[in-house]
Length: 168
Image (tube, rainbow, N blue to C red; front, top):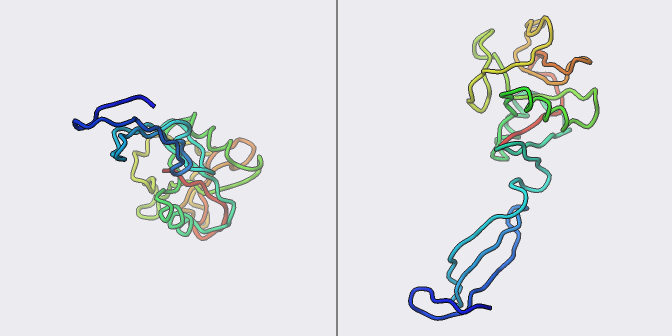
């Protein structure tokens, strides 16, 4: 250990390696245990979550209505996933366990018909609706991903149950 001076005291620099929320963490402190600095190394997401750019995502296979899924995401400090560009849409499709798995994403127009909003409040400036969708057939106010072989979005009744993707 190297000799250091912290706050006018001499002590040995300690390097601690511990795990916090699935992230390898390094901490340097003086001999009195005063934390001088920290640095995260490795993945930024907790175990079981997958990172894409600045957010972490997780697919849940348990069937839930759209509102139940959103509440479950909120309990995890997340929201149903918003999709803001084509690359993110492709990434989400890659999280699904099979090519035919349908799941909820965070888009809905339940507040005002044809005014689609993301549950996390981000701007609705990208979509991947299938041809002829959204069509509000049978009061469909919530969005699902991976519809048909085109892997596009469909509006679905919010009371239907399916898996979902959370993002934080």
